[in-house]
Image (cartoon, rainbow, N blue to C red; front, side, top):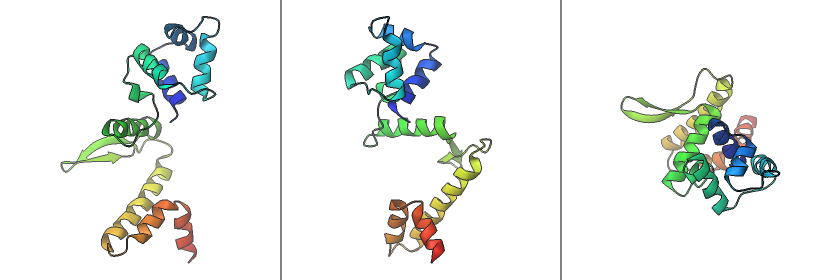
Length: 153
């Protein structure tokens, strides 16, 4: 999910128009909606200080709208939140273990399930044959093409 998509999602959840958000950020009234539309469409990318201002106006953590940062646990959490919002993945507990689950009621469930199943099978094979992790590494680095090449052999 892009920064613009995140801004749009939160802005709409807060019930604000593009113009209202732009004005709250101090943009001139005549161009406030245009500026926000540019950020939301990806035509322009807000700088860090503007991201902080937008977050303040929308009453969210700046991580909720900024670029994905996999290098921190907070960044990871917001990535997981994006997966929940975009693909319906959600946290659950099975036998005392936390896990990520797919929403069976989504129309893209079969496709997501198939992809996750391939991932699980590749990982499971790697766990069984830990002396040679190259296949799993190659699987990840060449996904989905690696699956097709293995089938062709």
